[in-house]
Length: 327
Image 1 (tube, rainbow, N blue to C red):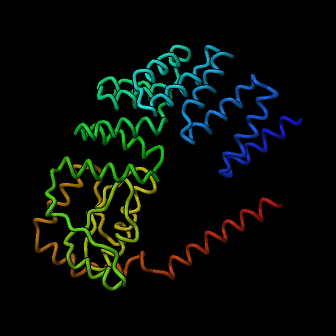
Image 2: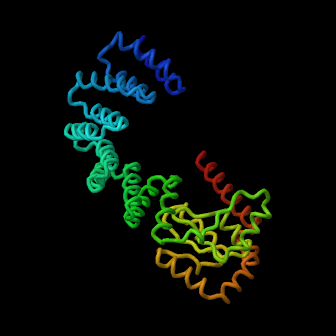
Image 3: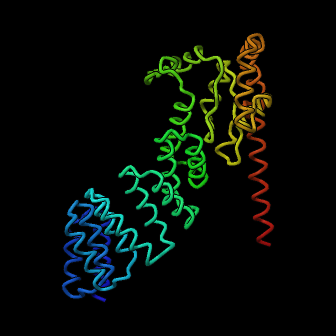
């Protein structure tokens, strides 16, 4: 019971960021139970975070003396060696981990990182793919493979990896950045055609920028919401690519309610085709820009009374269902 209390206390200190106090308690426990593998792992983690790599390695070596087939220990040892820049030794450790656990996705992924650092890209791809084969929902492996493809100018392959990553976590901001980089490099867009604007102090100045925009291209797979509404209110038509998740169907919902279903694409090719046709038809574009604010103003999107009434109906239905369930 006393050991349990010490373990809980060490964990609390660790979670609070007091690594030194946690380290002291773990050391105290090891003086009583020198063969406690869980404590050795915890202590090695603290040493690693403090960049005391040799001490971290000593803990892992003790674990391997207690259990020579501990795959996780070999993988952790590889991570430490990799952090020290000893990639060949790290790869040997990952290989040992895989020998003892052929389905160890983390070991394959870590080996891919080490091989990528060495410049052995084809081998790195193989290990990332093995990691994903062991765990198809391995977010980090999808991202790592996508980054490798992106840096090697294999943008189509990178996009596939990033799309899988976003399916697993639609809120992964760095992945959206990576997708943007792929589009930028793949399209060989000239730098002088891009304008970056800093923060503006007033909403009026912000909205006035839309006067410089002919057509707004909705982002995907994470659509715009406020920006799309702003654009249409300022007379700038928005073209969207509809996806399969909520985040990738916001644009479709907005445009459908405004009456612009013809600006909704279902494929990337259709997205490009709609954009090119609208940009090429200056008269149609001008007419749309002149009518757009009025279309939005009289659409269900701006009908607050109707929206509120429908919401109240939903609340009442929920209440009625609850009342019936109590009978």
